[in-house]
Length: 287
Image (cartoon, rainbow, N blue to C red; front, side, top):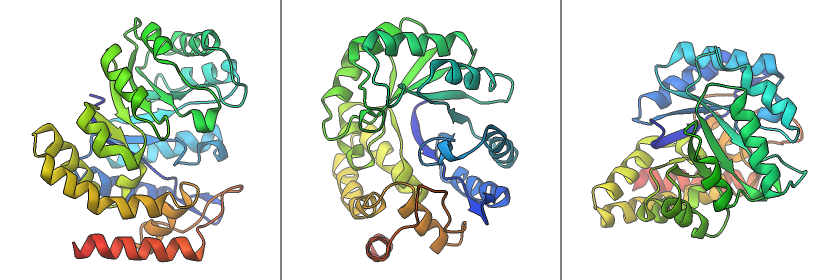
């Protein structure tokens, strides 16, 4: 269930408030592209700037709009608060929870493991671990993942370890979890290593290309997959040339899907980024 291409959806805003009709339209558009599901209230969704009431309203609007599995992001630095969040989603209809390591506090590996075990004890939902040490300040080590995986409630991991694919390869070799690539620029090598899918913000744009990229690798059509990855790379670079999701919202706004609005401390993309996006999108459409 947790394999394939998942899109961590942006949260449309207008005049400071959630734009729920825009969220429903965007979700419906993405649902028609062959993706496996959507992730709501993740980093790309500016979850830290949303209230609990807004998160639930966003979830309900998207759930009514699409018949796709929805994973909900639940994270924080205090275990008790994350446990409370996790428990609140049990009856909402979510397919699972995406839970990052506690950020900023940099706990030991034993503390990381205890944190996730406490979250699992508070919910019946499947849990996708989220390893993104350049944001949280702590890596979820492979041995910690192996220990957590003894509980079948932990079903997958979104691996965003940065520049190296070594940990992703180790997770594939030494854990039973579904491994999802969280680094959009590394999708092709991650799929070749055996990653079963991705949670890819860039897949908001031309999502069918990312679905095809994974399908080509799985079918052994490596030349086609390599060419698809080459064509996508300039757009992926442009989308991460400024902090996510500012470039993504600029591109989606230009395409008419939502207003180009974020909540502080995030700011809209600058002029150089927009020019890079326009060039990359033009190249992809021409190709």
